[in-house]
Length: 77
Image (tube, rainbow, N blue to C red; front, side, top):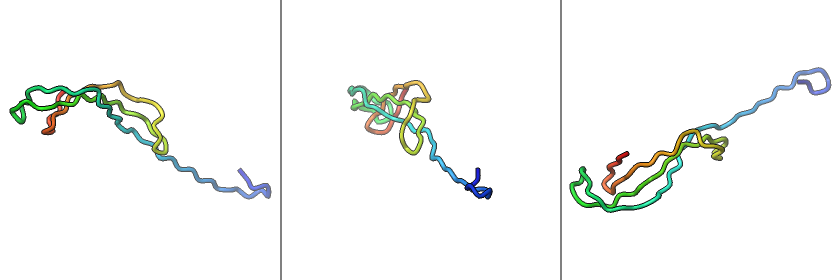
């Protein structure tokens, strides 16, 4: 590419790309937690990874996965 006078013009472009997980809570239930040893509230969470360009999610790059998370921090598939 030139500037019209035959001299080359340098161009610079940068992109911020990434893959980020998006979590969505789909339900709650009370059940026994083996880590804390008591009946506790568990969140049912759906997670899917998305491709991002300049921090804007464009399209999913993984299947949806569901897991359960206890208040104490235990996560089970």
